[in-house]
Length: 139
Image (tube, rainbow, N blue to C red; front, side, top):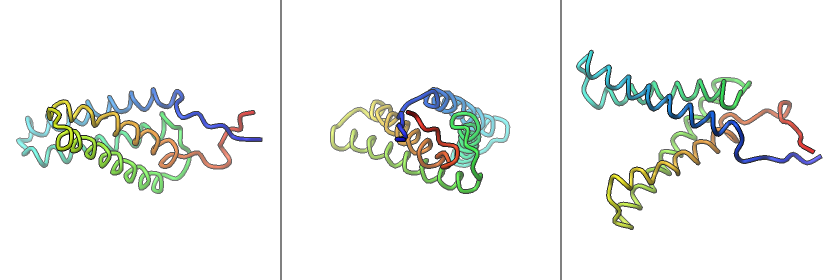
């Protein structure tokens, strides 16, 4: 029996919702640290992003991909995927700016699909890949 793989399923919608939640909560943490604790931009941004990445990992592991495997290896793979997704985003932004001469605000927006695509596919098929026992066989 051959296993068929759909590239996009309900996990993609869940992934997008997690992304929105982690973006908003990370920004909230950044603003809170700046406003309440007078933290500088770099420190607040670093903590906010770290919070967002951990929230994204937790929600995507449990909800989006319902991953049952060990946490530490999944976290290491997730961080690798996130790094690769950021690099792809940055490559698109820099190419848009330096090769195509696109406005910097538009260039930043053009990097989002690259980040989202690499992050989703990497999370689904690498970071939170199903184990051999839990894969469903489709006729």
